[in-house]
Image (cartoon, rainbow, N blue to C red; front, side, top):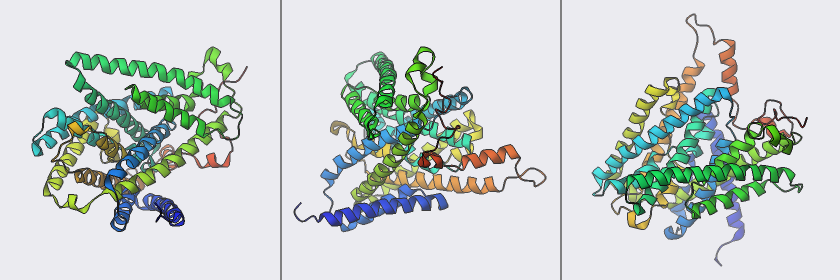
Length: 441
């Protein structure tokens, strides 16, 4: 520690953040996922800096956990629960659930084929690889049409939450003897967590609205981190806390109805909601940046010399996209382009991989397989976005005329970012979520 120059560390941290902004700009222009650029940057840095691998794992776990909370909250704050949106949200949930289960067992068979392990042990490794990365999807789909963007954000958020629940339920099932016990445990856990989440959501919203201190935006974030950590200690599905809070504060008029509406003041709520969205967006950006940089630094060249990595990784990719094509073709054909190729793996995959207990770890499984799946799935997403963009720009009717006015307007709406630009100006927009709050009268 005595040899560390704090000024060089400060310079390095600052340059990484600046580079991440540059990578985001490159991603918007080229559709090259910024996550790939961050991982490559971390790998290059790791070639010049000596890394103590055992010490880097806790850093990744801390960054990953905070990033996970920020990402789920970011997704929840982008969902408006309107009657007309419910079919889309329901379809996204069904597809996310089906793909999670089918892909998990498909990948488990691949892992079992290459490693002499039980199907249960293979499933523990397969679940992280079956989960889509909302950390990559949310910033990548900002330029899609409104409906496609909303569907993919919903699906990614559900994939994260359901995948993490599935992973920990499988781990907990080692202490249970029958399938009945596992089923009862799952539904009991979800029911208890949902009830607690809604109650705490009401309490937090009422509390932060009455805090008069100038510095108060990090308060709800600290409360969510506390609730998440306490929930994990009691083996609850803690991400439901985060999801519930995000949905409730973004749809406050839906939850605070009847006699409850008198506890919410419309005045200033839009500004508070806009500030929380902006803080969440900025925080998740910083955490994602350093998570993937540190992950890149942890990669060793030796792991990439194994032919098994490429064979197993490519088979896993085939299972992921073949099943995705089949399910989406059957349930949501309108989302096939470019949705079938938007299924990157990332932060959740890495985070859960590090959470596998030592007694369930597979000695013959090469971690470089994760890197291959993450990079290939991100490249396929890039190809899908570029191809769809080209088709979208070239769309016309049978007479070669441009799209009709309604469709063009929808595309322009989809070209906006997840967080509208006017959030940074502090001005209220009547179209923002929360602007239809009930009056005090």
